[in-house]
Image 1 (tube, rainbow, N blue to C red):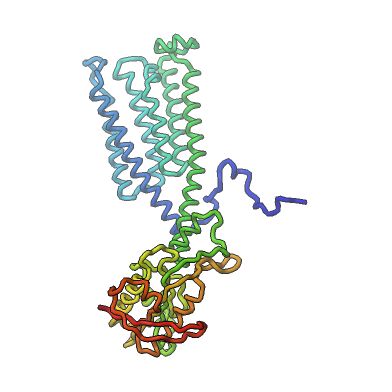
Image 2: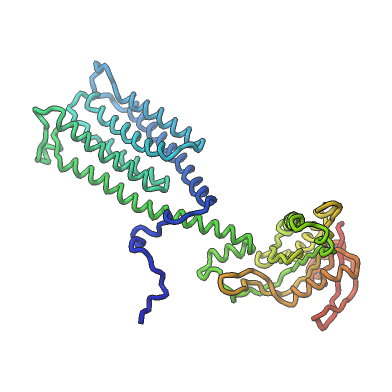
Length: 450
């Protein structure tokens, strides 16, 4: 019996390279997000390059000059000046987000050429044989130039820089060997190599191998890191998209939980529930075309969602023209009852005088109740949604409907009224009413703006 049938097949390269997102077609919005991160990285790389050339210049300025003062041409300042000019041009292009791929490849090669040119110039400036520059510690800056390319999160530019460095150093060694055919200065004595200008081919081979190995390891690590970057962008985008269908607080919990978006887990809490509905919506919908109706509803929902969010409420459902919002679940709020009333009053205020068509106004009725509910993800299979359930939710919807009988816009249950500090709002008692589904009467109030 095969016990592995439930495990997805993975390419054999995945354990080494990780998932290759380059093989997948990413939406343009995700590609733009990744590109934005890379363009920001290029600004950082340009700053680092400017710091490097500044350090070079300072070191050259303060270091004692041991070469002869009779030298007609001093190449180091010229090389540093060229590198500074190139770095400034690159920085300007990076700031303006105008660095195409070919410019990045060119930049990686030019960086190496200028650094190697600086090293090569040492034997001229100090009037030594060419082998003199092979022992320059400035070689170590090659590894800095290779490593800063990792900030772009693209192994191609690390590889191009590393290969340019390896090829360049080989050319530097070849120049030394053939610069004087009568005396190539090659030795196999390590002590002689260390104490003279002799050349040890094995040592130069080690340098080239080290450059290539560092390049390879960085490129491999960067390939995996880039996949993690792409995956994080995808997950971040999914979380943002998810927050459009479920409350943001729930989306954050889903993305941070071990189980993900699963049903069957509920959270019981005391909260204030706000339910809204548009008066005479059926007649209004008949007077508008489908396109006009959708536009009007979208505008309406945007208007009333703002005060709900402003006062800490979370919209859990849009039901046709109705809205169900909760305060203190899933977002904690110690003053949830008062904030629900504030949101209701603000909704009436933002809709005052607003037309959603030719003379069409959306008169909104609101019901508010406070009590224990259960909130969680419900659904089946791959389709789930966040909602709240319980008798208190049903009661809130009934209270909203009672506005028709009392000619009011907002009705508040006694549970909400009692949870608010006395004198905070201008409440008016409407009396006790019998609500379908409840065995006891409910005392209700209306509230007006002060």
